[in-house]
Length: 94
Image 1 (cartoon, rainbow, N blue to C red):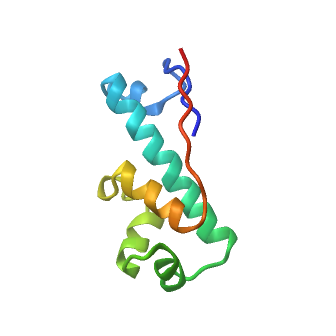
Image 2 (image 1 turned 90 degrees about the vertical axis):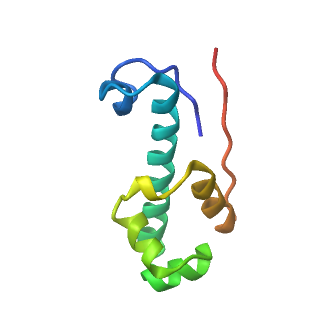
């Protein structure tokens, strides 16, 4: 996950008035949720199948695919990616 220099227009959460530090975390969460939803769609998984792969209840998959971002921490989203055999990395930029 690339950490871009956060300027207005690069991060919707900054544009919405969030504190810059919080905006970065929110953007990371949004990116990971979008990626996970795309994976479920691309693999043509049912919510039940996705739940098995992610190690969570089907109702949590429903929250994920419906964009309920407030229900997932950054750490949990990284854990989901790892359970799918994927690696999340963070790059720092000056």
